[in-house]
Image (cartoon, rainbow, N blue to C red; front, top):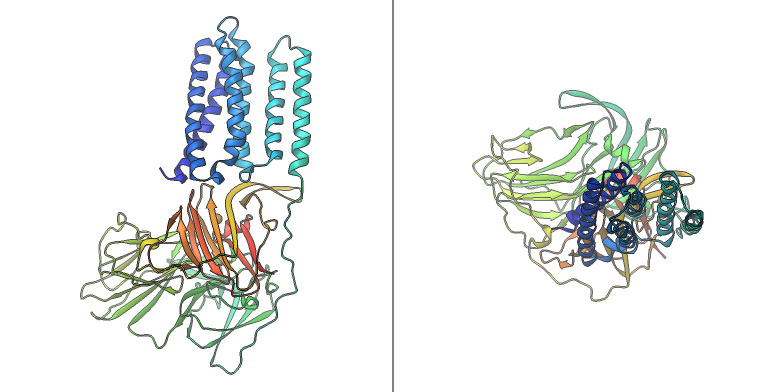
Length: 579
Ligand code: C2O
Ligand code: CU
């Protein structure tokens, strides 16, 4: 069982146990003696089963189990003790067991709320608020159900609830330690002069584009989705003028995966101001990394990218040889891009398919008809990639894979999530059941280039209640905080930095660090054994723990965020900062 499914099972059992206790309480109120006993017995079993899932999660990593061990377990034990001891006294009216059973149900509910709303890291404040809720709800139930409540017990209950509530609120209201990154004071511009310059102009504007035979209202660069392909040769200087015609909320250009100087990174409020309607901004940087990249707006990026403000950036080592095709996959207003395309390719021709995932979720790609090698991931060449036959690859949001093969005499076709997008002739095959490549074991290994690490960080990904001022939101959190309250990772130039990403939430988080490629060290404690993997985008699935490292060699303030852009928008974004 994976940790991800264990997390789901644990939540399901907790819900079930809580429902059984509450149901038992209701049955007791209705004086259904047999039903009450059955429900209570089932609740005890569920609680016992939960002990197993909690222990298993704690063994997978304390991050997965912390609040369950510290809050849920004691509350559940209290519930079993109180309800169980009352039920063992068989005589008398079963209705008198109602309050103890409800107490166990409230305890389960309180613990669930701590997990779902508060998550990791656990806090005394959160625990005390849960206790206050449990005691308060029990006191109210007693008043309602007990014909002769003892005033002393009631008063003690109320006093306990109020004390827990006040302490809990005081403890959770302590402001987060995190200063945000402030506007302005942007890094100085780095100028390059005298090299061959490739100039492009990208004008952002609202547009109507035709997708799959229907018109869609989009935001587009130069009226097209995707925007123009920017193709350069290594050594060129790229000079890209960004203009905004009518995107009211502003635009920028972020060179996804391209490790540009900080000033060119295109993050509004961090490296520049958003470019408003009528304004322009010129990006200039040298194309000194070969490979497949992409660009997109980083202003209201969740909406902007989804609506079409993106395009491909390819830097070639020299003149193109053979067939060289980009396949940027996107979902525009629910319709898949690109449109399927067929071209005849002479047998023996080298073919490179540059697959780009510009959506916020993972896509599955499968090439049928020829053995294929994954030559590069995220723009970085792999070492010793072997030919793959009938194998699919999963590309995370923002990620790129370069597939290369020699065109056979028979047709070849590329499928994305089962839909054919590129072919050299008719191919009919179902790729749904093909095995999926694990890039961590693909290609030829090499030792990690560093023997010491200067800085270590851990990012625990979760969900939780977050307040922006007085407005509550259900945020995607990192270490219990949401943007802009997540403390920045501060490093010194030259440091070798590792960070661990732990996903204790039930959804995939495609992680993306700006300005640097990170080397994958391990996943779930198992070292990567394949070709060194230098990534800028990687999927951290539920229950997974990734350990990655990089050298801090590109000074500035860099966004470090989830590339499910809706998650980033809902808080899952922080900064890497050079001191
Ligand atoms: Cu492709 Cu900060 O993003
Ligand atoms: Cu995410």
